[in-house]
Amino acid sequence: MGLAEMQKDLNAEVKRLKQELLESERSNREERDSLVKAVNVLGTAMAAQPDMVVEWESLRRQVQAEGPLPLGGIEESLKRIKDLMREKDGSAEGVLKELELLKEKLQESGRAIRKMILTAMDGLYPLTGEVKAKAGSLEAHLNEENFGAKAAAEEFQEFARYLGGKIHEDFRFVNSEFLSLLNHVKELERTLAKDFGGEEHAKKVDYFEMKVNEEVSLIVNSFDLYGTVSEIKSAVVAKIENIRKMVLAKKEEEMERLRSAQQSILGLQKRMVEAEKVALEMARKAEEFHTAAMKDGLTRLYNRKALDLKLAGALKGLAQGGASFALIIFDVNEFKRINDTFGHVAGDKVLQKVAEVLNESFRKGDFIARFGGDEFAAIIGGMNEEMARERISIFRKNLGKRRFTSYKLGEIRVSVSAGMAVAGAGDTAERVLDRADKAMYEEKSRR
Image 1 (tube, rainbow, N blue to C red):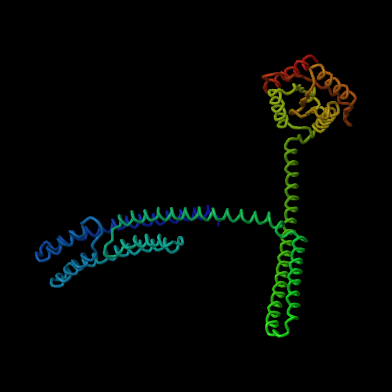
Image 2 (cartoon, one colour):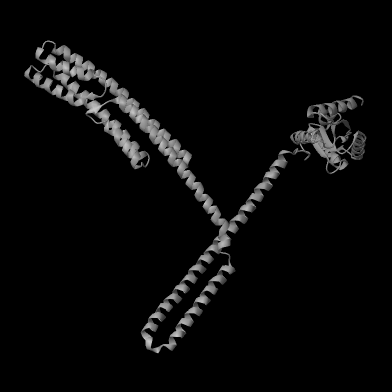
């Protein structure tokens, strides 16, 4: 479970506990009102019993007093009234039972609120000593002998706010420590290869062993001169042997660390290579999707969306001091007649061949798109109006060399009208398109 989900669950639990406390407070108020009514009824029954009026007045004052109900005093008053009632004919037995029941309900409400608080302390969140002490202080005000629902609700709400603040601080600390740990792990990955760097580290271990062995041999040989101190020699030789074993163990430990580190590095490198392959494949697919979204499905030319983006980019470049460009719009003449006469399949073939001729007639860097329906558009840069018109003528000559034929109905006559607009300073896409479109329709009207 993430931190955000834990916080959400915590807030929901605290909200639920608050709602239960408020419901309990409302229930306590209703029960208290019922208790007052019962006491008043009891007073009516006792009006004819002067010796009971004093006890009834004491009970009434305790019930109607502000603040927590003094359950101990109420119970004592009830006991005295019960004793008096036993001396009478027992006519108020039903009232006494109801009072006893109301007292039990009040005590049950007090226990329910304490249970909610204990749930918050023990089951909701691991509390520190400071928070437990504050919760314990809250519980002390909710004992069965001195219960006040309003005060309890206010204190519990204050405790809930206090607990929420502590939990928020804990989450911030845990989040900070977690981020710090991640940074340490990343730093370890960066330095792992450097600290356990292959053959160089192994050579250092071998050199260390060699130097220690040399020192050990010198010490052992020196004892050959002192035959009278054999006991000392034996003891020292034993210690030297221990040193030799420690060195060998250290070497094995370091070599094992080296092998483990190398395996870790190889594993990391392998995963990095795999991740890079996946990233490259995703980038390639993303590029394919982007390209597909910008291409017309029938002609494989760029579509209207790509044309709008290209035109906006060209105008932006022009506004920033770039070269001017020309927009040419082409429209297949009488294309509806072609569709109606030869069929839509033949119409699609015509559009595909017109697209092929456009690609052949313009430069590789020129932008060719299907504008919509039977209309095409070209954006060509680095040309003046005369050069652009020459390019249109080349296209028409190439188109005239193509033969469009229906196997059933014979030759299909195809011609194209064209209109051109050269973009200037302050132009917008709408203006350039409008001028080119009008020029195309003017030519079409002359046919």
